[in-house]
Amino acid sequence: MARKSVTKTADKKKTPARTSKKNVRTEAVKEEKVEEIQKVEEVTEEPKTEEPKAEEPKIEEPKAEEPEAEEPKAEEPKAEEPKLEIPVTPRRSIAFIGSECYPFVKTGGLGDVMYALPKALVKQNCDVKVILPRYKCIPWKYQEKMVYKGSFQMDLCEDGRSYYVGIMEYVWEGVVYDFIDNEEFFGYGNPYTNLIDDIPRYCYFAKAALAALNYMNWIPDIIHCHDWQAALVPVYLRTMFESSKLTSAKTILTIHNLRFQGVYNIPTIRYWSGLPDHVFNKDALKTGYNDANMLKGGLTYANIITTVSHTYAGEIQTPYYGEDLDAHLRYHSGKLRGIVNGIDYDIWDTATDSRLYANYDVTNVLDKKKENKARLQEELGLVQDDHKFVIGLISRLTDQKGLDLVNAILPQIMDEHTQVVVLGTGDDTYENSFRYYENAYKGNVCSNIMYDETRAHKIYAGADAFLVPSQFEPCGLTQLIAMHYGTVPIVRETGGLKDTVEPYNMYYNTGNGFTFDRYDAGLLLDAINRAKTLYFTNRWCWDEMVQRNMQKNFSWDNSAKQYKDLYLELTR
Image 1 (cartoon, one colour):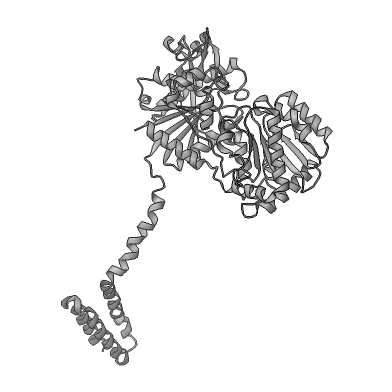
Image 2: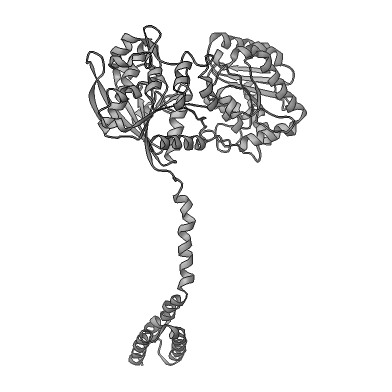
């Protein structure tokens, strides 16, 4: 019986090949009937030889259903296409050159930009390398992970004096950080000490950054420089590096704060930079009778100039904000752009911020902010009262930040309904003033004359309103963080504050903050009083503004896209 079954199965395997496609299903039915008869007649060993018979219909059936079986396969790539097309723009390589970068070293907003923007550009289909000085103050936990990439001697000074250039590399979150190593220039103190020491170290840094790119044979499409410390990079590139491979790269110089320009006498800068005499003319580095301005030289030689907000780009072309470079910037206005900064949602996220008393999002912000407010009042020794209007102020205590206005009106805003929390350091005048106010209004004013990152997060989350009355503000990040944390900003209409805070309109219940235009203490007092009036008399409008602010997108994604578009425009 076993032999017969084998011959039967062999015969049945041959029959599908002889029959046409139309008879496939009928033959499969006949085979199934034969199999049923065999199961009755054959011994228990026979099913082992009959297994191929059961498989034959399964093999043949998909042939008839091929169009239906292939449809989901054809649809799968279509569903995945958007994921693959996230970097829809061509790839570009960008070298960032600047004097500071979080978390290695940070003294202000430049450090935040140098960290967050490269990380966002990686998502925009960019290769990014960040070049920084290897300061001695960089924490050891980062220095010990740096990898030595090479070293060389570089001619620097006018008399041919050469210096050692070492390259130490650190890779983090898709961004390559290359640190320029030289103990003579970076082996002491903080990033900025005094102008006499800073001029030589940043002349060296600008040239060493380009020499390091040459040494590593990494030729970027764009070299993006930041502030006066890297302003000589475009000058070097168009003079002493014009015959190198780097000459194909385009340069962008970003102004984060025009007040700081790197101005010193021409003989000193000529000696330490080694630049040719022809760059020390009135159209490039020369300023006044015998001074050289490093930032001015960079503005002249850069292909594109950017600032950190659209309004600030216009303001710096006026005498009031121009810091003696307004005429020069008007001349180069054709290549001047303004792009607002963003905030890093990996650090500033109310739903995951471990520094907060209670995490929250837009769905429960109204309840959770009350909890954060109560805990903040308790920690700072303020009167614990949910009905108090808490105003937060986190800033450098200087005239630029409008502290003279705050100092002038603070006694007028203090009443039984108001509390003020200050965090920051700066001029002795303002530090002592806020210490006095804390003593004069015990339980309602808390002056933290220090900077504490954890306390800053708690103030952003626990305050009702946030004060930024700056005399000028290139961009400002504090008002963006405050809005993202559900705290309503009270700002002066200048620079990035004007670009990011829409004044509240009581008739249409629109806007996301309270503003004043002229730099005047009375107008600041009026803005604060308007905020307090809305808070106490139309709380539902206030709560809607809180939720509206939290829903806005202040991340770096929008800014990074604008920078990527600028890079593409420059490299067409």
